[in-house]
Image 1 (cartoon, rainbow, N blue to C red):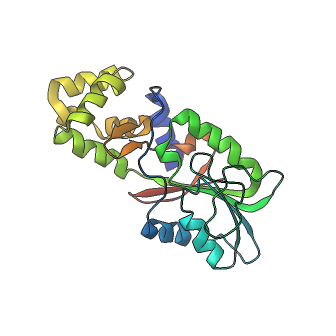
Image 2: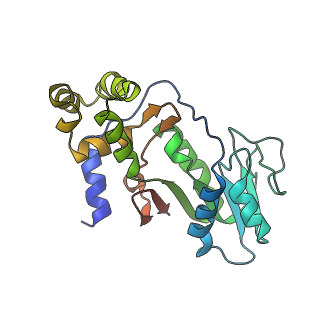
Image 3: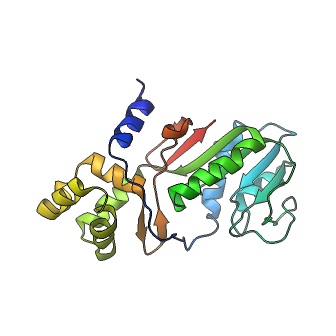
Length: 229
């Protein structure tokens, strides 16, 4: 069993999925410096003449426009933040999917970590048929560290969410937290909490675990993960 399989097995053993009201994020387009990072991640995969689908491009289409500016043919689509029907032009993000189109590469960037898992499943199913190569770039284990820091400092919003929402499905972790506070939680507890998802003042965040769904972990750091299929 390789590392990714062991990680997936650990999560499957104590899987809690957020099923509350649909969360929303205050951010609808990633920052310019993050756009350049996404571009660098995809650079080794993109060849001249390829057609690219940016699924969940945000209001501003920063990544799509960076790639368009390099001469790539990119369709930017976002069912939540798109406007109009033009997904091809600089600055444009379509609210309608590219019907009947085929692409060499399709990707999402920092989309899956701001949606519930049932929405993630819908997105995965939507993106997959469009291209031979599919990539999903999302936040990494720093989300677990973020949750730990918030619970250690007893952030009221995070503590309340952990107790009333996460604790309802992981009663063992809740018991440890109530007995010993943040110090009573293990690394696996924090990872499972991040995989469940939590709400902060900046919106909803969740740690995707696509190993469970047949995707390969192509690249990982503390801050981000890249999945491929």
